[in-house]
Length: 184
Image (cartoon, rainbow, N blue to C red):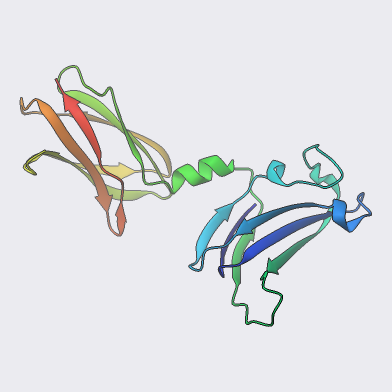
């Protein structure tokens, strides 16, 4: 299940199964929400039940209940938003990888002047890969046409500069975490 939410309280999602008659035994998950709007993805097998250690069999779900738990026991205004609620076959770890903004460099250290940069992108987009030395001098720049999903970009350095270099990847409104690569 994927959705976008905000509110800062704890969200309890309960999947009501027709075959479960006791409310306390329905499958649920509790998620602490950020105050800011954020995308969430949960795997159905992460829901738990008080009556069973088995993963949920989703064949007889009749209702989805979203409950906000304020936890104070006092009257207070709750400003929680939900949008883009959908079920997906995509694995939540894959969805998280699409949004992670991490790059991997291999082999590292390199043998020669070539290595690969891999990363996930949540959309097709134009990015710029830059390699600088530790003094901040530009060694190489490469335009990357990223696709949605896993991207593997071969990188070849033309100069004979050996040592530790910084690899950055960014684009319009997006910046991946930089990594160090050792060129031998």
